[in-house]
Image (cartoon, rainbow, N blue to C red; front, side, top):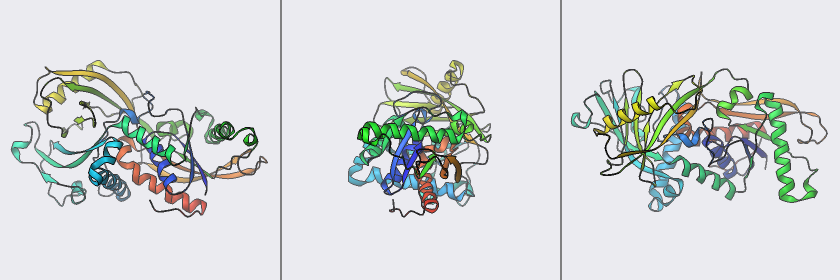
Length: 384
């Protein structure tokens, strides 16, 4: 089976590697950051991480991606007493979404997902905060990002995938990054199989580029931009609220959310969505505003709430939406494939720009990559 190198180990890269392994491909991951690392540019650990679609009804493929994750996650929380869901770090929780707009009709395009989620309903007037005009509820999913990323990494290794932590020269362009990835894979092979493997050609069949915001430099993609998100990690010292996911949208587009962190007694308060801002330093004033908004959403005072952490992450936004497509890059690939330094067309599948929807897009987006690789390489794959 073909040998694929996935660049990047956020939720998109890890899910893609897992999907390819399940389909029978050989896979290595090369990434600067791995689960457990803390960096503002490593977005996935900082996510609020819930299932709530951002897709519009016209974005058919993205809708399908979101529903793929929903179906897989709901299944994991239901089968065998939800054991797999616990391993994954996910919990099924009611989500309530409050809006400053009147309640749309059930056949409105904005509620395209209503027939596909469980226990959907509109909220009664006495269930809606006074600052909102309408609300909906359904069975959603809360995700513990640290546990979920660790789960994906563990599954990748269990299925024979290899993980190499190393920094690629993204500023030197895609071709040089691919060459460096090949060198890292070759060195890893040498260490794993002994000296006899040192001079073996690393026959990489394709690269999957899951570098998020890093693709702005790697691919010279000017459509990419950061969406700064700041959150708080809190604990309720006494009388914690019901473990629902609460989300409120105001007329100016601001979003306030309160999310229980699965497997813990912690909560995430958020948040911000500031386009075009690269600053990863915590802004104390914004943190205070987030705390006030979230306590207001809960109808509580600040007493008994302990702020344990303050986080900032940069979501990979992209004008025009997610890029998932094949590019054949002409490389001088000494040590890649022919071993003679001849020019070769390297299949690169780009997969980045998921903005704040990486977790809920990941399963469906990875399946799209699986199909593209099968077409580009002429390989048959097992259904996943």
